Image (cartoon, rainbow, N blue to C red; front, side):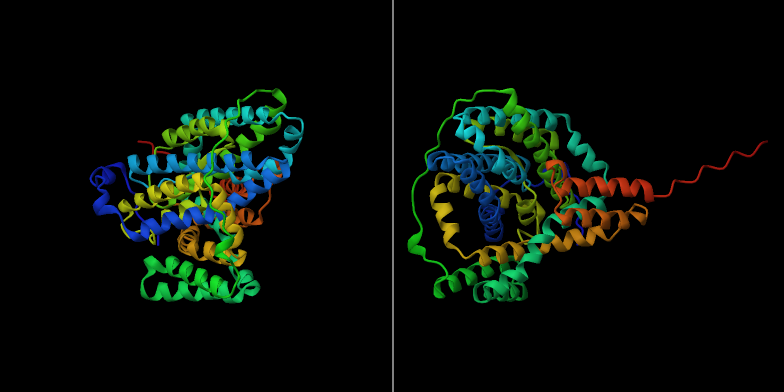
Length: 419
């Protein structure tokens, strides 16, 4: 269940060798991670673009920017660190833009939005370089951080049952394929599930492959302008929810999977990348959490030193997807929603199991940490978004505060006997 951390010395002894380290399961893990990103988080971005009234060209450029930006960073980070580093775009950040983007587009001030994106990227880089997020995660007991991850992943598992009810043939067949794959070859269980679900979707007529549109996406440069109004309304809340709701859980995934990453370098670089891709529409790039859990799991590869291939694979698929943004959008519009929901759920079962195990084992901490971890889990699953900040952040805070109150103070040392 719980795995030993992979130190810098361990990775140094395992020098990258693509011919030796490449595995089908790791490549599939990278593909599944991208598929899950496009099936869920991308839809939030597309809804923000639709609600804001962006043109098809600017919408496609936005998808290109977050895809290529995520892909380049995932590919580079995974290769240089030999760890499955996953970079993606801010989901709560896109959700914030659903309501805040429209007035600027209507007033022909989209360039102010781009300027706010750049400010957010620079602020994220500064926060990353200081290492504040990494220090917080390192100082937090593992059961609490594991509970945050479990709370983030749990909704995906819960939705599988409803997906089967709504589309019993495709989603149900996908589940059966997954179970058969787990029985005979666990490493390829998700691939078997995806193949069975896709085949049933075509046979049943639930999807029409001929309706998919193939087109090459060309990014659009928007020269940024800067306004205090956009910085306060967009950059500041975007910065907060990205740091609290995305980068913190992303670091938790890496730590709980046994990887000791240089959070200052990685988070700082992700912030710089956000600023670089912002003129093409990227709102914020950050550590991935949900998709990272797919790449860092044992299903990616039993040897954690070879799972960096999943991160590189994810990067390549993101880059390809960026240039085929129009194709990707039409493709996932054609796939039955129940199939995507079920696929995401089964792909995340293993990391969910590991995080729940770590949640219920106190390790070197006082047993009261289990109760604090359960509080963390409950708050995170609740899905609250107080002050525009997602529940993962509030779950982490609730767990830390609860443990500080519940944990007994160590007894004072007895006074030395007088001679």
